[in-house]
Amino acid sequence: MKIKERLEKILMEKAPGPAPSFSIFHLLRALELIAEKSFGRLKLSEKLKLGEGATRTLLGRLKEAQIITTSRTGCKLTEKGRKLWKQYRSVFKRKVCLENNELTLAKHNVALLVKNHKDMVKTGMEQRDAAILYGARGAVTLIYTNGKLVIPGVSEDVAEAFPEAHEQIIRLLVPEESDVIIIGYADSQEKAEYGALAAAWTLLNDC
Image (cartoon, rainbow, N blue to C red; front, side):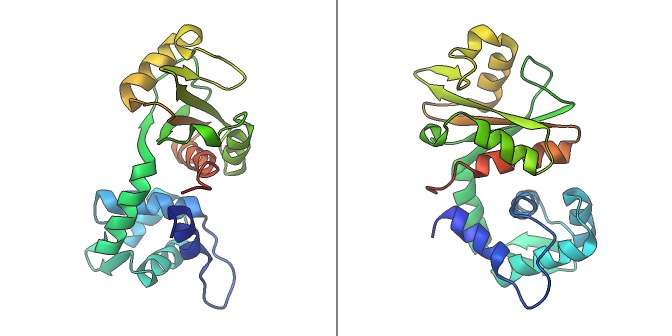
């Protein structure tokens, strides 16, 4: 099963009752945090900016899917969870916070590299709209092609048009041919991260 289908299946499977008040991007962020270290529910709730009830439901879904185990010391990935996380990270390769440059358009700017998905980008508007839908102020989509960073419809050579941004992106994300970089920008770190994830998620129809 493709990574997008596997994760959305976890989100959609539910017992009788109201729909969950969390999104696929809360689920992705929870996986990322738990992959780094064991987390208790209260701390995870704080990190995700979710209520305790929603966080409990989210963790319940992950446990039912055998992605995590829970104990008094916190939540940990199972072997199945580690394999899922490895599959996810093979596509969502790197994530960094950017310092001020010509393409940092808000207080918080999160850049995410999506491996080998250049052909899924059209104008970049779909990614921007997805980021806005999930609370960001917007997103910038760049592709690495023929040895150059390009912003569709804006710049055919980011190195020339936005040299500071180019230097940071190349140094921190190390893109290769056909990679896509999404920069989600927002007034809070959480919204910038969720915006970048939402924008990148639009590229994964083939994964």
